[in-house]
Amino acid sequence: MKFSAILLILIQFPLHAQCDPEYTYFDTIPDNVNIISGDSCFYTSDIDVLNALINDNDLDYDSPLELGTQTWFSGRLKILVAGNYGNSSGVNDTIFTLPDSIGNWDQLSSLYLEWNRIESLPESFNQLTNLQSFYISNNQLQYLPNDFGNLTILYLLDIGYNELDSLPESFCDLSGLTYFWAFNNTLSSVPACICSLDINWNDMDAAWYPYFAIGGNQLCDNVPECVANSEHFHTSLDQFYYSFMVTDSQDCDAAAVSGVLIIPEKIHLFNPYPNPFNPTTTIEFSIPKTEFVSVKVYNIVGHEVTTLINNELSTGNHSIKWDGSRQPSGLYFVQIESGSFVQTRKMVLLK
Image (cartoon, rainbow, N blue to C red; front, side, top):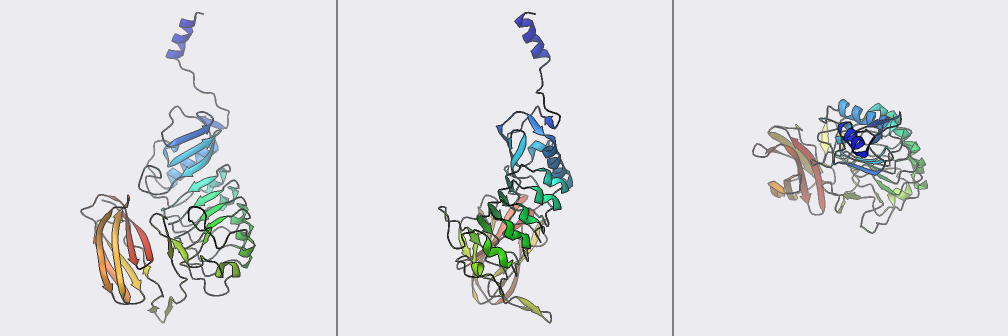
């Protein structure tokens, strides 16, 4: 057969890549997918977890490869960026739950899930034994699995701005942990064995990020020495961009006695409600003393939308409503600032 005839056949009947039985071929690769090594064959088990994540959260994608930003190596998912950032790099809607099959991502090295509303991690999460960095800040995480310590090569863990009140004993098995950020939870205790971890409790890296920070919790009694004596026992990162450190002391005075709220030592910005909202939401906060307070709303790119408060307020609880009827649907941030204290909450306007 002449070459021209062979070429004509290939044009009319193009050959598809041949994948091993455990892999699935995709003829279209979206721009959000980075392939370091390999071709259009993707490990079917990895794809199934992506599909489960989409279906369980009713996300709007035509292909599992469209979710977030993905990096693949030799057909295996290595990095997934699925934060709810309000832009094209993350997911296009909120993740509320992770699929039980997430343990099948056993080659995953980095997972980004910031600014979603995840309350718990599936039991199979302990199977992600190749995970090196895990970002799940600004969710509603209430606990870590008891066997979380199985992730022995985990290098960076960011669980800031969640609702954790304790850490499991297995946490002390995270022998590879170098960066640990647990600020702005409701932690009242940490395992005594945490001091066995090889974490630099006091210093910062070349980019001025602390290796350890645990401010804004409720660590008041029986705090392990390495934590209590850390330079960053009262350190947090700004909630908006993680661009600078802020001082956020341990909250040891907040309590309810006979139904009466005792004002804490620091300012506290509560989650707006309703959230998502249309078109108004209520923003509540408490301040421990009369002081100058600024409350502003920003859009997803950090531009100021409006200033709600910018004056001196008295001690106690305060409430204000924001009307977003003149703004487009999307992700917004309300930020309270007083002196060196800054705290931010996420709001979603849905019209």
